[in-house]
Image 1 (cartoon, rainbow, N blue to C red):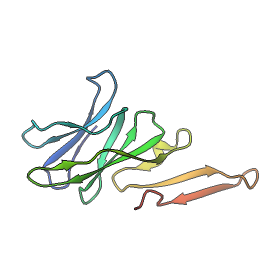
Image 2 (image 1 turned 45 degrees about the horizontal axis):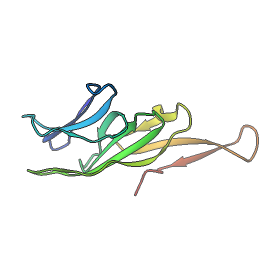
Image 3 (image 1 turned 60 degrees about the vertical axis):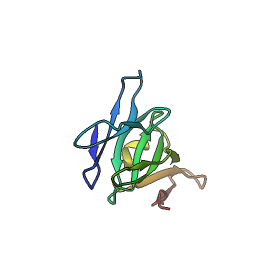
Image 4 (image 1 turned 45 degrees about the vertical axis):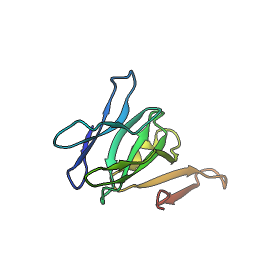
Length: 123
């Protein structure tokens, strides 16, 4: 998966050249300033609409991660931080480009009841 930053100066992608998939960011259109963003595996990198955040699914496929980005001539990619986890296979419900999700959480109320948590990734 490949994602171009909104300003067109950076590209985020995954590579398994180390033996597992990791998320990287490089300059664009001329590569050469590659930086690894994930540290324990990562997939499906996507930029926030303003290009100041890169969000991706962790290598365990059950967690969401985010790294702050300061765009510009010498962009700064912050250290990735865990945003939260998904129950089971719910990672497919995550929309990293908008940093929004609909999370279904098993309820303690009773059979058939669920709890819906919206916008749980907002700062």
